[in-house]
Each structure stands twice: as structure tokens, then as C-alpha cells.
Amino acid sequence: RTQPPSHSQTHSASDDIVVSAAMQQLRDPGVLIVAHGSRGKPKTVRLVLTETAITWRTEMRKKNSANPSAAKELKLGKLHQVPLSHIMYVDVGKQTAALRRVENAAVAESLCFSLLTKEGSLDLEANSPRERDALVSCFSLVLDEVHAKNWRDIYRGPSSDMPSSFDDGDVAMGMGPDGV
Image (cartoon, rainbow, N blue to C red; front, side, top):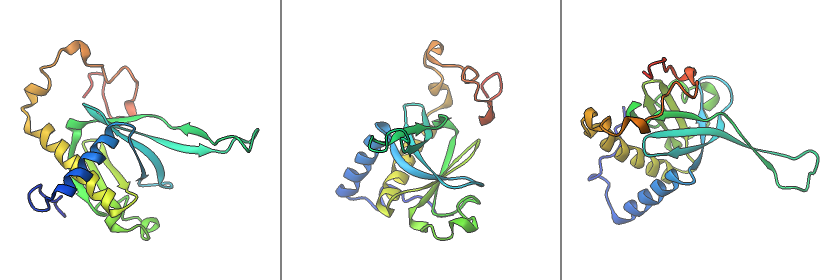
């Protein structure tokens, strides 16, 4: 496995600016990036980092057939979400089965990274090597924070603010009725 670069190895002031700009964008409005699955065509998704999770949904611009001169309509897919505590690792390059598919042979290794979660991997293709490196740094910093804390501290917040993962009915993510 290629380890994400540690902060001290490749550190410069301009890197800091790039990473903090990427972090801002990830939080709001999110980053448009290509997601690869183990089957089907790659899809453009908007990846957003919240305080507690990463979320993504497909975004497609659809031509308005009734009025071709109008702006393209935005079609949004189902919102997916993974708690930050479920992200275990950031893999740099094409390490996963989804990114190693024959159909992705033309995709540059320097654009790819994967977020390995308890539910599976989220395999992403950035728009440029620089963007890929900045996003890998962002997620590495997030994981440092999430996993350095004692798990009891994470759950010490008021339970009334904790939405039940069962409410949204997203059983596809492998959530049971008790939210695990």
C-alpha cells in the first residue's frame, strides 16, 4: 500500500493553502468528483464533508426537452452517508478492485484515491493530480482527528442530537435497527 504522505514529509506553505482551500470546498458546497463502482459506469457525484460524516449523491445535468434553450436541469440521486468514524483508511492510487477494472485502465493512477470504510470502499477520481493530493491530505487530517479521540469522547454529546440511523431507512448501508 502507498501510505498517504505524512504532514512533515511534504510540507510547504503553499500546500497548506491548497489543503485549507480544498477543506473549505469539501465542507461547502462540496467537491464534484467521479465515483467508480464495482459495476456500471463511473458517475459524477458531489462529495461533502460534514462535522460527523461524508455524504455524496450523483449529480447529472439533464437537457430540458420542453425548452432546449433553458438552462440544463440538475438531477440529483439518492443521498448516501458514511459516519467519519467508519472511514478507516485513505488509499492513494488504484488499489481497489473497482479502480482496477479493465474499463478503468485509461484512468490515470495519479487522479485516484479510495476511502476505505466499514461498509466498503468509495473509489474516487479527482480532476487533477493536485486536487487528488489535496483531498487525500484533507481526509488524512480528518481521520487523524476522528481516530485520535477516545471513542467515549465522540459519544459524549447530547444523545437527543443524535439522529437514529434507522429513521432514514437506508438499510442498504448495512445499518441494523439499532444503528450498528
